[in-house]
Image (cartoon, rainbow, N blue to C red; front, side, top):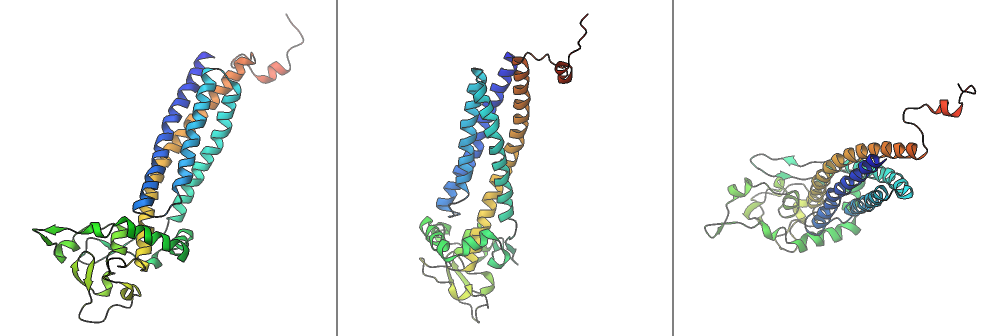
Length: 285
């Protein structure tokens, strides 16, 4: 009995530790929601799941230490639904970020992003007027475009140097015009029209050298945000998958140990068949 309780207590302590990367992932998404991704949504379910695992594991740990059957039952019951919620979260995160990626460009080290490459619930949410107004304001306030500036010997970097940079999706989509528009590079956020007509992409006419406008209303900016969200959510989901697998293993072991405790409490000899106990022999020798 004591060994089983120690095992359950150890598993609950390890489960408590496993809640930390989930909670950390939610906090990391929250920090990106305030600076880069600018979409405050997915981090809250993750933070809630992390806190729930932390609280329930402490309850299970206390139940194992004090042999409190109610707390141990509560741990097993609630943890089942927490694991189910975590699995649902992982499936949802992959489902809504399934489509879309940047397009490779000739003689460019960065990618261009197009809204038509994305679809589904997340694309509609980001592209809607009610949400995009808040998202574009967040990007503008984060100064992500103004932070792109680099100087070489006191002068802005040349176009060839800029073309070799690896830009983030938001930097590529929101801080410069699409490459197909044919604008001529002056500096990172200043581009002049080329000698001919601009491309047919509607974003070509939406681009502005006004540092408060740039391409914040462009579809390429919305696509850049979607690509950034996809990258962030996929990183967190990989951690969640590893944690979920370990949680399931711990849950199965804890349940088996708890069943063993119940068997001992009921004075059921280990390995004795229930049928033999339910129908004992009438002949006693």
